[in-house]
Length: 73
Image (cartoon, rainbow, N blue to C red; front, top):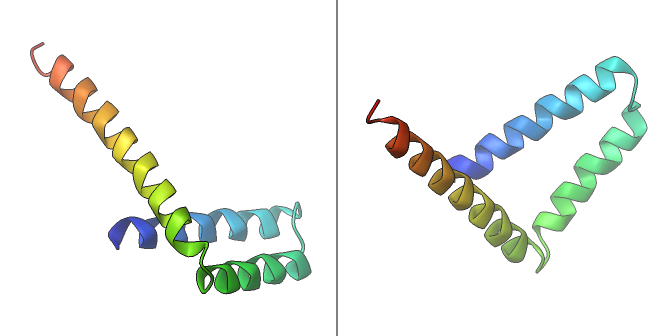
């Protein structure tokens, strides 16, 4: 749950800066937000969550291996 909240916060910040910089207007941003909400209520939500969890697990394992190999210095 913490990871999904962090990703939602990250995507929200990215969306905010895209709107602020002018690379995305308010209309498409609202459509993107509504699409996200509607996608979360479909059967695609579980595979997307599983995919994101596998990516974060992979990043964590790479980070752990880097930290364990540099810990001896």
